Length: 415
Image 1 (cartoon, rainbow, N blue to C red):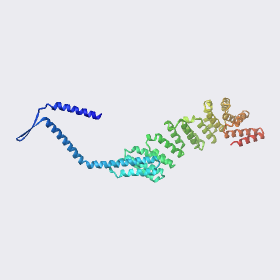
Image 2 (tube, rainbow, N blue to C red):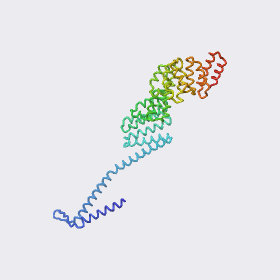
Image 3 (spheres, rainbow, N blue to C red):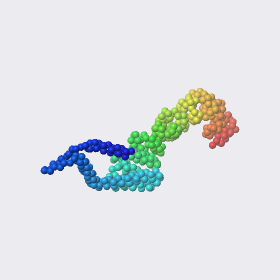
Image 4 (cartoon, one colour):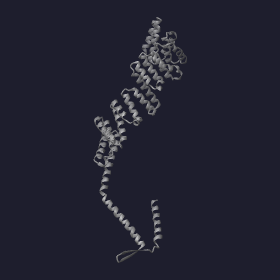
Protein backbone atom coordinates (compact mmCIF):
# COMPACT_ATOMS: atom_id res chain seq x y z
CA UNK A 1 0.00 0.00 0.00
CA UNK A 2 2.82 2.35 0.82
CA UNK A 3 4.51 1.68 -2.53
CA UNK A 4 1.30 2.47 -4.38
CA UNK A 5 0.99 5.80 -2.57
CA UNK A 6 4.58 6.74 -3.39
CA UNK A 7 4.04 5.77 -7.01
CA UNK A 8 0.97 8.01 -7.24
CA UNK A 9 2.83 10.92 -5.63
CA UNK A 10 5.75 10.48 -8.05
CA UNK A 11 3.36 10.39 -10.99
CA UNK A 12 1.72 13.58 -9.78
CA UNK A 13 5.08 15.34 -9.46
CA UNK A 14 5.99 14.23 -12.99
CA UNK A 15 2.75 15.60 -14.41
CA UNK A 16 3.17 18.93 -12.63
CA UNK A 17 6.81 19.21 -13.75
CA UNK A 18 5.92 18.43 -17.36
CA UNK A 19 3.08 20.93 -17.37
CA UNK A 20 5.13 23.70 -15.72
CA UNK A 21 8.54 23.18 -17.33
CA UNK A 22 7.71 21.61 -20.71
CA UNK A 23 6.95 24.93 -22.51
CA UNK A 24 9.28 27.13 -20.47
CA UNK A 25 11.46 29.19 -22.89
CA UNK A 26 13.03 31.38 -20.25
CA UNK A 27 16.78 32.06 -19.95
CA UNK A 28 19.01 32.82 -16.98
CA UNK A 29 22.00 35.08 -17.73
CA UNK A 30 25.15 35.34 -15.61
CA UNK A 31 27.48 38.32 -16.00
CA UNK A 32 31.05 38.36 -14.74
CA UNK A 33 33.15 41.32 -15.84
CA UNK A 34 33.15 41.09 -19.63
CA UNK A 35 31.71 37.61 -19.77
CA UNK A 36 28.13 36.52 -20.15
CA UNK A 37 26.69 33.03 -19.80
CA UNK A 38 23.12 32.08 -20.70
CA UNK A 39 21.45 28.89 -19.51
CA UNK A 40 17.90 27.75 -19.77
CA UNK A 41 15.64 28.26 -16.83
CA UNK A 42 14.98 24.53 -16.58
CA UNK A 43 18.71 23.77 -16.35
CA UNK A 44 19.21 26.53 -13.79
CA UNK A 45 16.41 25.18 -11.59
CA UNK A 46 17.80 21.65 -11.88
CA UNK A 47 21.31 22.83 -11.00
CA UNK A 48 19.93 24.86 -8.08
CA UNK A 49 18.05 21.91 -6.63
CA UNK A 50 21.03 19.62 -7.12
CA UNK A 51 23.39 22.12 -5.49
CA UNK A 52 21.11 22.50 -2.49
CA UNK A 53 20.80 18.72 -2.16
CA UNK A 54 24.59 18.36 -2.37
CA UNK A 55 25.12 21.06 0.28
CA UNK A 56 22.62 19.47 2.65
CA UNK A 57 24.20 16.06 2.14
CA UNK A 58 27.67 17.45 2.76
CA UNK A 59 26.55 19.22 5.96
CA UNK A 60 24.84 16.07 7.27
CA UNK A 61 27.90 13.97 6.45
CA UNK A 62 30.14 16.45 8.27
CA UNK A 63 27.89 16.48 11.30
CA UNK A 64 27.75 12.68 11.31
CA UNK A 65 31.51 12.50 11.14
CA UNK A 66 32.03 15.10 13.87
CA UNK A 67 29.37 13.50 16.15
CA UNK A 68 30.68 9.97 15.70
CA UNK A 69 32.57 9.92 19.06
CA UNK A 70 29.49 11.20 20.91
CA UNK A 71 27.25 8.60 19.29
CA UNK A 72 29.77 5.91 20.12
CA UNK A 73 29.75 7.05 23.74
CA UNK A 74 25.93 7.07 23.82
CA UNK A 75 25.92 3.58 22.30
CA UNK A 76 28.28 2.31 24.99
CA UNK A 77 26.14 3.92 27.72
CA UNK A 78 22.99 2.42 26.20
CA UNK A 79 24.64 -1.00 26.09
CA UNK A 80 25.64 -0.77 29.76
CA UNK A 81 22.16 0.47 30.61
CA UNK A 82 20.66 -2.56 28.87
CA UNK A 83 23.11 -4.80 30.73
CA UNK A 84 22.13 -3.23 34.06
CA UNK A 85 18.42 -3.55 33.27
CA UNK A 86 18.92 -7.17 32.24
CA UNK A 87 20.75 -7.90 35.49
CA UNK A 88 17.96 -6.29 37.51
CA UNK A 89 15.30 -8.27 35.65
CA UNK A 90 17.29 -11.43 36.22
CA UNK A 91 17.47 -10.59 39.93
CA UNK A 92 13.69 -10.23 40.01
CA UNK A 93 13.19 -13.54 38.20
CA UNK A 94 15.61 -15.35 40.51
CA UNK A 95 14.02 -13.77 43.60
CA UNK A 96 10.52 -14.87 42.63
CA UNK A 97 11.90 -18.27 41.72
CA UNK A 98 13.33 -18.74 45.22
CA UNK A 99 17.00 -18.61 44.13
CA UNK A 100 17.93 -15.89 46.59
CA UNK A 101 21.71 -16.29 46.31
CA UNK A 102 21.57 -15.80 42.55
CA UNK A 103 19.12 -12.93 42.97
CA UNK A 104 21.50 -11.18 45.36
CA UNK A 105 24.42 -11.60 42.92
CA UNK A 106 22.37 -10.30 39.98
CA UNK A 107 21.22 -7.27 41.98
CA UNK A 108 24.79 -6.52 43.03
CA UNK A 109 25.93 -6.86 39.40
CA UNK A 110 23.27 -4.37 38.29
CA UNK A 111 24.37 -1.90 40.99
CA UNK A 112 28.03 -2.35 40.04
CA UNK A 113 27.32 -1.64 36.36
CA UNK A 114 25.39 1.47 37.31
CA UNK A 115 28.09 2.70 39.69
CA UNK A 116 30.78 2.26 37.00
CA UNK A 117 28.76 4.32 34.51
CA UNK A 118 28.51 8.00 35.56
CA UNK A 119 25.68 8.63 33.09
CA UNK A 120 23.53 5.99 34.84
CA UNK A 121 24.37 7.01 38.39
CA UNK A 122 21.57 9.60 38.44
CA UNK A 123 18.85 6.95 38.12
CA UNK A 124 18.13 6.82 41.86
CA UNK A 125 14.97 4.78 41.51
CA UNK A 126 16.93 2.00 39.78
CA UNK A 127 19.51 2.10 42.57
CA UNK A 128 16.89 1.90 45.31
CA UNK A 129 15.18 -1.05 43.63
CA UNK A 130 18.52 -2.83 43.30
CA UNK A 131 19.28 -2.33 46.99
CA UNK A 132 15.80 -3.54 47.95
CA UNK A 133 16.20 -6.69 45.88
CA UNK A 134 19.57 -7.34 47.47
CA UNK A 135 18.10 -6.69 50.93
CA UNK A 136 15.15 -8.99 50.28
CA UNK A 137 17.44 -11.77 49.13
CA UNK A 138 19.66 -11.29 52.17
CA UNK A 139 16.59 -11.49 54.42
CA UNK A 140 15.56 -14.79 52.87
CA UNK A 141 19.09 -16.06 53.41
CA UNK A 142 18.96 -15.01 57.10
CA UNK A 143 21.74 -12.47 56.51
CA UNK A 144 20.37 -9.75 58.77
CA UNK A 145 23.49 -7.56 58.76
CA UNK A 146 23.64 -7.54 54.96
CA UNK A 147 19.91 -6.93 54.77
CA UNK A 148 20.04 -3.97 57.17
CA UNK A 149 22.99 -2.45 55.30
CA UNK A 150 21.24 -2.65 51.92
CA UNK A 151 18.01 -1.35 53.43
CA UNK A 152 19.80 1.62 55.02
CA UNK A 153 21.34 2.54 51.66
CA UNK A 154 17.97 2.35 49.97
CA UNK A 155 16.28 4.51 52.60
CA UNK A 156 19.07 7.11 52.63
CA UNK A 157 18.98 7.42 48.84
CA UNK A 158 15.19 7.56 48.63
CA UNK A 159 15.06 10.41 51.15
CA UNK A 160 17.40 12.52 49.01
CA UNK A 161 15.66 11.84 45.69
CA UNK A 162 12.15 12.91 44.75
CA UNK A 163 12.06 10.35 41.93
CA UNK A 164 12.65 7.52 44.39
CA UNK A 165 10.04 8.67 46.93
CA UNK A 166 7.58 5.92 45.96
CA UNK A 167 10.37 3.38 46.42
CA UNK A 168 10.85 4.68 49.97
CA UNK A 169 7.29 3.68 50.84
CA UNK A 170 7.95 0.19 49.55
CA UNK A 171 11.22 0.04 51.48
CA UNK A 172 9.51 0.91 54.77
CA UNK A 173 6.72 -1.61 54.18
CA UNK A 174 9.29 -4.30 53.40
CA UNK A 175 11.31 -3.35 56.47
CA UNK A 176 8.18 -3.63 58.63
CA UNK A 177 7.39 -7.03 57.15
CA UNK A 178 10.93 -8.20 57.85
CA UNK A 179 10.72 -6.91 61.42
CA UNK A 180 7.55 -8.98 61.91
CA UNK A 181 9.39 -12.01 60.55
CA UNK A 182 12.09 -11.30 63.15
CA UNK A 183 9.39 -11.11 65.88
CA UNK A 184 10.40 -7.49 66.54
CA UNK A 185 7.02 -5.84 67.03
CA UNK A 186 8.31 -2.44 68.34
CA UNK A 187 10.55 -2.04 65.29
CA UNK A 188 7.68 -2.92 62.93
CA UNK A 189 5.32 -0.45 64.61
CA UNK A 190 8.01 2.24 64.49
CA UNK A 191 8.48 1.76 60.74
CA UNK A 192 4.75 1.73 60.10
CA UNK A 193 4.36 4.88 62.18
CA UNK A 194 6.81 6.70 59.90
CA UNK A 195 4.64 6.11 56.82
CA UNK A 196 2.56 8.97 55.39
CA UNK A 197 -1.10 8.87 56.37
CA UNK A 198 -2.28 7.77 52.93
CA UNK A 199 0.23 4.94 52.78
CA UNK A 200 -0.52 3.84 56.34
CA UNK A 201 -4.19 3.31 55.43
CA UNK A 202 -3.44 0.98 52.54
CA UNK A 203 -4.63 -2.59 52.95
CA UNK A 204 -1.14 -4.08 53.02
CA UNK A 205 0.05 -1.56 55.62
CA UNK A 206 -3.01 -2.28 57.77
CA UNK A 207 -2.38 -6.02 57.54
CA UNK A 208 1.19 -5.49 58.70
CA UNK A 209 0.01 -3.26 61.56
CA UNK A 210 -2.49 -5.92 62.59
CA UNK A 211 0.23 -8.56 62.69
CA UNK A 212 2.59 -6.24 64.59
CA UNK A 213 0.02 -5.28 67.22
CA UNK A 214 -0.96 -8.90 67.77
CA UNK A 215 2.70 -9.84 68.00
CA UNK A 216 3.27 -7.02 70.49
CA UNK A 217 0.26 -8.14 72.56
CA UNK A 218 -1.72 -4.96 71.96
CA UNK A 219 -5.21 -6.38 71.37
CA UNK A 220 -6.96 -3.00 71.60
CA UNK A 221 -4.82 -1.52 68.81
CA UNK A 222 -5.18 -4.74 66.85
CA UNK A 223 -8.95 -4.49 67.20
CA UNK A 224 -8.96 -0.92 65.82
CA UNK A 225 -6.79 -1.97 62.90
CA UNK A 226 -8.97 -4.99 62.20
CA UNK A 227 -12.02 -2.72 62.07
CA UNK A 228 -10.30 -0.54 59.46
CA UNK A 229 -9.40 -3.63 57.44
CA UNK A 230 -12.99 -4.83 57.63
CA UNK A 231 -14.20 -1.45 56.36
CA UNK A 232 -11.71 -1.64 53.49
CA UNK A 233 -12.95 -5.18 52.73
CA UNK A 234 -9.59 -6.64 53.62
CA UNK A 235 -11.37 -9.80 54.84
CA UNK A 236 -14.54 -11.61 53.98
CA UNK A 237 -17.49 -10.84 56.26
CA UNK A 238 -17.26 -14.19 58.05
CA UNK A 239 -13.49 -13.92 58.56
CA UNK A 240 -13.78 -10.30 59.73
CA UNK A 241 -16.48 -11.21 62.26
CA UNK A 242 -14.43 -14.08 63.66
CA UNK A 243 -11.26 -11.97 63.82
CA UNK A 244 -12.99 -9.07 65.57
CA UNK A 245 -14.49 -11.44 68.13
CA UNK A 246 -11.17 -13.14 68.84
CA UNK A 247 -9.43 -9.77 69.26
CA UNK A 248 -12.20 -8.59 71.56
CA UNK A 249 -11.74 -11.77 73.61
CA UNK A 250 -8.00 -11.08 73.81
CA UNK A 251 -8.69 -7.52 74.95
CA UNK A 252 -11.00 -8.77 77.70
CA UNK A 253 -8.36 -11.28 78.81
CA UNK A 254 -5.88 -8.45 79.47
CA UNK A 255 -8.06 -7.09 82.30
CA UNK A 256 -6.80 -8.12 85.74
CA UNK A 257 -9.39 -6.33 87.87
CA UNK A 258 -12.90 -4.95 87.55
CA UNK A 259 -11.75 -1.40 86.74
CA UNK A 260 -9.57 -2.57 83.86
CA UNK A 261 -12.38 -4.76 82.55
CA UNK A 262 -14.80 -1.84 82.72
CA UNK A 263 -12.32 0.33 80.83
CA UNK A 264 -11.85 -2.29 78.11
CA UNK A 265 -15.61 -2.70 77.76
CA UNK A 266 -16.10 1.07 77.43
CA UNK A 267 -13.49 1.22 74.66
CA UNK A 268 -15.43 -1.25 72.52
CA UNK A 269 -17.56 0.16 69.76
CA UNK A 270 -21.33 -0.13 69.98
CA UNK A 271 -21.32 -2.93 67.39
CA UNK A 272 -18.99 -4.95 69.61
CA UNK A 273 -21.11 -4.41 72.70
CA UNK A 274 -24.15 -5.58 70.73
CA UNK A 275 -22.41 -8.86 69.85
CA UNK A 276 -23.84 -11.61 72.05
CA UNK A 277 -20.62 -13.63 72.09
CA UNK A 278 -18.47 -10.65 73.12
CA UNK A 279 -20.96 -9.64 75.81
CA UNK A 280 -21.06 -13.21 77.09
CA UNK A 281 -17.26 -13.36 77.31
CA UNK A 282 -17.22 -9.99 79.10
CA UNK A 283 -19.80 -11.29 81.56
CA UNK A 284 -17.69 -14.41 82.21
CA UNK A 285 -14.67 -12.20 82.95
CA UNK A 286 -16.68 -9.86 85.19
CA UNK A 287 -18.12 -12.77 87.16
CA UNK A 288 -14.65 -14.25 87.61
CA UNK A 289 -13.51 -10.89 89.04
CA UNK A 290 -16.50 -10.68 91.41
CA UNK A 291 -18.54 -8.22 89.35
CA UNK A 292 -21.72 -10.30 89.12
CA UNK A 293 -24.07 -7.32 89.07
CA UNK A 294 -22.13 -5.65 86.28
CA UNK A 295 -22.06 -8.91 84.32
CA UNK A 296 -25.86 -9.15 84.57
CA UNK A 297 -26.13 -5.53 83.47
CA UNK A 298 -24.21 -6.32 80.29
CA UNK A 299 -26.36 -9.41 79.67
CA UNK A 300 -29.76 -7.86 80.38
CA UNK A 301 -30.27 -6.31 76.88
CA UNK A 302 -29.80 -9.73 75.31
CA UNK A 303 -32.24 -11.41 77.66
CA UNK A 304 -34.81 -8.73 76.82
CA UNK A 305 -34.61 -9.70 73.13
CA UNK A 306 -33.72 -13.36 73.48
CA UNK A 307 -36.04 -14.36 70.63
CA UNK A 308 -34.01 -12.30 68.14
CA UNK A 309 -30.82 -14.25 68.85
CA UNK A 310 -29.66 -17.41 67.17
CA UNK A 311 -29.47 -20.71 69.06
CA UNK A 312 -25.70 -20.36 69.50
CA UNK A 313 -26.04 -16.78 70.75
CA UNK A 314 -28.75 -17.76 73.24
CA UNK A 315 -26.57 -20.57 74.52
CA UNK A 316 -23.61 -18.21 75.00
CA UNK A 317 -25.74 -15.62 76.82
CA UNK A 318 -27.38 -18.28 78.98
CA UNK A 319 -24.10 -19.90 80.02
CA UNK A 320 -22.68 -16.46 80.85
CA UNK A 321 -25.62 -15.83 83.17
CA UNK A 322 -24.89 -19.12 84.95
CA UNK A 323 -21.58 -17.65 86.13
CA UNK A 324 -23.24 -14.38 87.15
CA UNK A 325 -26.27 -15.62 89.12
CA UNK A 326 -24.77 -14.81 92.51
CA UNK A 327 -26.97 -12.17 94.13
CA UNK A 328 -29.51 -12.09 91.28
CA UNK A 329 -32.59 -10.03 92.15
CA UNK A 330 -36.29 -10.80 91.81
CA UNK A 331 -36.61 -8.43 88.84
CA UNK A 332 -34.99 -11.12 86.73
CA UNK A 333 -37.62 -13.77 87.51
CA UNK A 334 -40.26 -12.67 84.96
CA UNK A 335 -37.85 -12.61 82.02
CA UNK A 336 -36.28 -15.91 83.12
CA UNK A 337 -39.63 -17.67 83.38
CA UNK A 338 -40.66 -16.26 79.99
CA UNK A 339 -37.40 -17.54 78.46
CA UNK A 340 -37.90 -20.95 80.07
CA UNK A 341 -41.38 -21.18 78.59
CA UNK A 342 -40.43 -19.95 75.12
CA UNK A 343 -37.24 -21.97 74.81
CA UNK A 344 -38.15 -24.98 76.88
CA UNK A 345 -36.14 -27.38 74.70
CA UNK A 346 -32.86 -25.48 74.89
CA UNK A 347 -30.78 -26.92 77.72
CA UNK A 348 -28.50 -23.90 78.05
CA UNK A 349 -31.49 -21.65 78.77
CA UNK A 350 -32.85 -24.29 81.15
CA UNK A 351 -29.52 -24.37 82.99
CA UNK A 352 -29.40 -20.57 83.31
CA UNK A 353 -32.99 -20.34 84.56
CA UNK A 354 -32.50 -23.29 86.91
CA UNK A 355 -29.32 -21.77 88.37
CA UNK A 356 -31.07 -18.42 88.89
CA UNK A 357 -34.06 -20.07 90.55
CA UNK A 358 -31.72 -22.06 92.78
CA UNK A 359 -30.00 -18.80 93.77
CA UNK A 360 -33.44 -17.44 94.71
CA UNK A 361 -34.03 -20.69 96.68
CA UNK A 362 -36.86 -21.81 94.42
CA UNK A 363 -35.57 -25.37 94.50
CA UNK A 364 -38.64 -27.17 93.22
CA UNK A 365 -38.69 -25.36 89.85
CA UNK A 366 -34.92 -25.29 89.65
CA UNK A 367 -34.52 -29.07 90.08
CA UNK A 368 -36.55 -29.93 86.98
CA UNK A 369 -34.65 -27.49 84.76
CA UNK A 370 -31.27 -28.58 86.08
CA UNK A 371 -32.10 -32.24 85.48
CA UNK A 372 -33.02 -31.38 81.90
CA UNK A 373 -29.69 -29.61 81.38
CA UNK A 374 -27.67 -32.37 83.07
CA UNK A 375 -29.23 -35.07 80.89
CA UNK A 376 -28.64 -33.27 77.58
CA UNK A 377 -25.56 -34.77 75.90
CA UNK A 378 -25.44 -31.90 73.38
CA UNK A 379 -24.59 -29.45 76.14
CA UNK A 380 -20.91 -29.05 76.98
CA UNK A 381 -19.23 -31.02 79.73
CA UNK A 382 -18.57 -28.03 81.99
CA UNK A 383 -22.22 -26.80 82.07
CA UNK A 384 -23.52 -30.33 82.64
CA UNK A 385 -21.01 -30.83 85.43
CA UNK A 386 -22.23 -27.61 87.07
CA UNK A 387 -25.83 -28.84 86.80
CA UNK A 388 -24.95 -32.18 88.42
CA UNK A 389 -23.12 -30.44 91.27
CA UNK A 390 -26.13 -28.21 91.89
CA UNK A 391 -28.39 -31.25 91.93
CA UNK A 392 -26.02 -32.90 94.40
CA UNK A 393 -26.36 -29.83 96.61
CA UNK A 394 -30.14 -30.16 96.49
CA UNK A 395 -29.87 -33.85 97.45
CA UNK A 396 -27.67 -33.00 100.43
CA UNK A 397 -30.18 -30.42 101.58
CA UNK A 398 -32.84 -33.14 101.43
CA UNK A 399 -30.50 -35.53 103.33
CA UNK A 400 -30.55 -37.90 100.35
CA UNK A 401 -26.94 -39.07 100.44
CA UNK A 402 -27.47 -41.77 97.81
CA UNK A 403 -28.84 -39.27 95.32
CA UNK A 404 -26.02 -36.84 96.11
CA UNK A 405 -23.45 -39.57 95.50
CA UNK A 406 -25.08 -40.41 92.16
CA UNK A 407 -24.97 -36.75 91.11
CA UNK A 408 -21.33 -36.36 92.10
CA UNK A 409 -20.45 -39.56 90.25
CA UNK A 410 -22.27 -38.35 87.13
CA UNK A 411 -20.35 -35.05 87.32
CA UNK A 412 -17.04 -36.86 87.71
CA UNK A 413 -17.67 -39.00 84.65
CA UNK A 414 -17.91 -35.96 82.40
CA UNK A 415 -14.62 -35.12 80.75
